[in-house]
Image (cartoon, rainbow, N blue to C red):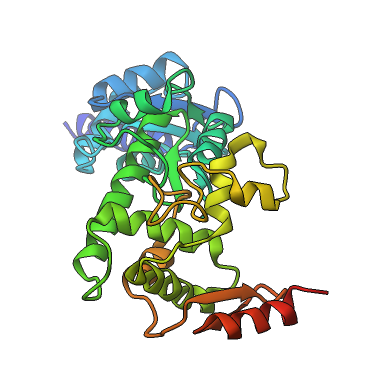
Length: 326
């Protein structure tokens, strides 16, 4: 009887030692780095089977048992994972339950056009390019947007995403972020602005974004355009003309360009442009809806990125002679 008890105790100890060995032993990676993808809705059992098939796991039942005991069986996150070094079973469970995904990122810059945004998305190696052959209008339909023109509708920011994610999801996130930011900015706007809709504010913000060379001037630039709109004056801003020129723009803007009428030429047409001309950031949205308290109607670049503001044409002409005419 005593001998049998010893055998049982020894068997238990050996079993515990075996479990501990396989639990804390670093798994041998099929390759380094090793990438694997867990599909949405994957169960712990299916994950163990998937990893066992590629010989990452040689103790599938133990992996399942550990997952259930640790309470992580129902916490598995789908996505793409990358293992750059061997991990234990417990570490692997921790990784897939916390969703420590292999992430890529894309920085969308304030002032970019939608064309530039699309080019950056199309060239990104970490995205699945499901919109590559779509027109801008078809892309808007795909993400559920109601607008017909894409310009200005996407918020510039740095976006993180799992590698091989669809570009549709990135566009949708950037679009929804802009919708939220614009709605919040519009809700808290200053009183008495000559802007009828949030879309008007988006257009003005896009112009302010392109005209701003120094951040500290942004609110004053917005004030100039707001004051001009109130008085019915032409906005007369070069970035809108350049946008209207499209591919014809060669880096220089000439007098004939200012005189050639297009829907975006604010030297020939009054009011705001038909659409935004860029992707405005949060600061430009704020400036458009909270312009500086000023009577300024003109500004001219000083040559160092900042601008000189004037309340009347005589002062403006003096500033032009000082800063622009050599």
